Image (tube, rainbow over all chains, first blue to last red; front, side, top):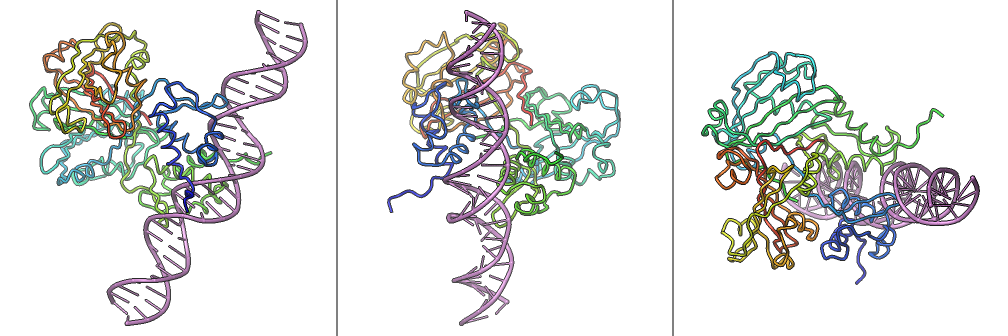
Length: 233
Length: 233
DNA sequence: TCGCATAATATGTAGCTACTTATTCTGTCA
DNA sequence: TGACAGAATAAGTAGCTACATATTATGCGA
């Protein structure tokens, strides 16, 4: 049998991708319609559709009804960012995970926190400051505010044993999540929490989640010096 | 007609998602097989398959052949990060884009740069330092190394007019891209380029691209103070 | 009861048809 | 020439069948 087996849609995708890489189709060019390309590469339109859809999702192509498929003129670097539970991340680098609750209070949230949660009226929220450790050393310091109205069980939970990070992620799926990554200089509390010099540059990840319109939690995770946020395509 | 039109696969996806949100299916739970759920929600298995595939891609569910579909016990926050051409980004915030070439040289690359490009042997590379401006103020300073072997035209290009960022992104599609985000303290050159205080915390985005195994370029983009990298799901 | 071959099963993939929808082209009429 | 209705087009979606594949369950023999 020299005849090829059926083409897998990933092969078709890679074949089209290769044509963009090798210059057969250049930035801005229009590709043949799915049906013709499918005939040319020996697959069905459904398979081509899947391949094209994937290339369109990944930012290489642009597709418009009736307009056809074009190589994006302004390509974007589109990466997938996976942020696991901190415990998993620490274990993933081969370190022993540790956790320490530093502060817990039920009190009025500052304006800035209400903004992040898109709340108008002043409100009492649960504030939790905690430290994640890798092999005993500070790894990530998190400063979290939780809405007890959305997460009823949280006020009765013993957060000295399990982290709010873990409990929330396991028990409270969200429908919407905002993420922001910034660099900030370590202030005195951050420096003491992370055992670094005041003024050190630290990566901060702000995450806010909602279930429908109801805010769940907003957290600023400040990572130890040298932390790298990685993705690969 | 009270009968519904055909269900769109996104509706089916959202219906299943809603069941996870409202606790019908909890973390770790096994879902009914596609066929049964499809019957229950009134769609075909293909539609259910699409919906499930999407939920699996987004990190909410885990699917295994024969094993069935489960709600992920360790959910991940999975975000999509789009990094456009700097010009587009600046224009996107409503500012006037500007560009300035600061330095250009063809010389031996330091060890660290070769590592990023996964090159073993010493090699001469094109180094380009440039500044992207928003409304005349420094926005992103990039320190780039390009492989002329992979990108033949680059040595003859006048980089004082158009940025290497733009030219490369438009003319050199890549098959692989590594991304890393870190925080660093402004050293003297960075501070002078970005008009900020030495020691300020800055966000750095390192990007390295290859076409197959051939390295294209590696670039460190240092963003102005206060820069936020955003995603939303 | 242990090990292994085999069966059962749920998802993954390919291909087909039929229809929908967004967009662009075109031709006609004022 | 310009506006607009309608035709044409290419991708999007839904549903079907058939088969592939990975993994778990089962049952039989030693």
